[in-house]
Amino acid sequence: MTPEPLDRAAIEEIIEMALSDHIAFADIRALHGLQPDQVNTLMRAELKPGSYRAWRKRVRALGTRRAICK
Image (tube, rainbow, N blue to C red):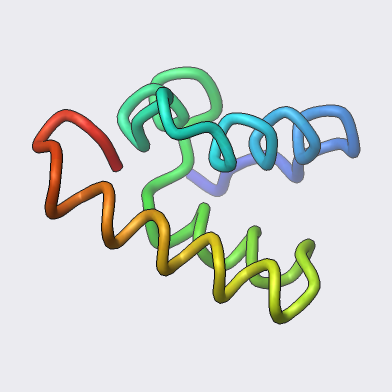
């Protein structure tokens, strides 16, 4: 079963959720069915390279500080 392609509104919602420090990947998976690696791929495609690197750095730092976060 292949997932349906995402429309622009869904992509923007996923980006907004992923950029939030208070929403975990599990919440994105529950709402949109995307795994963390799929969110990473989406973010890499949609963000500017510097913004993507800053986001990844922040997500990695949050993951080591709090177990419930990304």
